[in-house]
Amino acid sequence: MDEGAAAALLKGKSLLPRGVTRVEGSFDFGDVVRVHGPSGPVAQGLSNYSAADVERIRGLATHEIEGALGTKDFDEVVHRNQLVLLQPQE
Image (cartoon, rainbow, N blue to C red):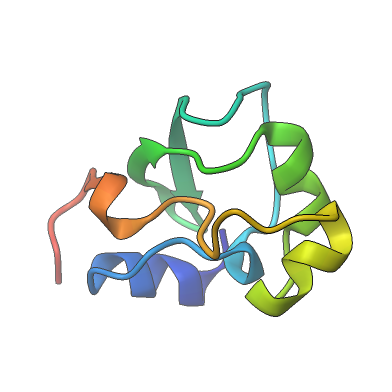
C-alpha cells in the first residue's frame, strides 16, 4: 500500500482500494492477508475481496468498485475491525 494508506491504518482506519498499490499471492474472501507499506509489514487482517478482485480494484475510489467488479459488497479491502497492527502506533 502507499504511504497515505499506511498512515491511515496506523490511525485506526480501514484499508481502502485507493491505497493498494500491488497484490501478491493468492487469497480469497475471508482469508488472512498481510498488508505491507513502503517500509515493510504494517498489519494483517481478513480480506473482504479475493486477490483477483483486489487486483481489479486497486487504486480505485470506493465509488468505483461496483463499476470494476459489477457489484460492491464492501467499501474496504480490509476493515479496521478485522485488522491487527504489526507495529506500534505513532
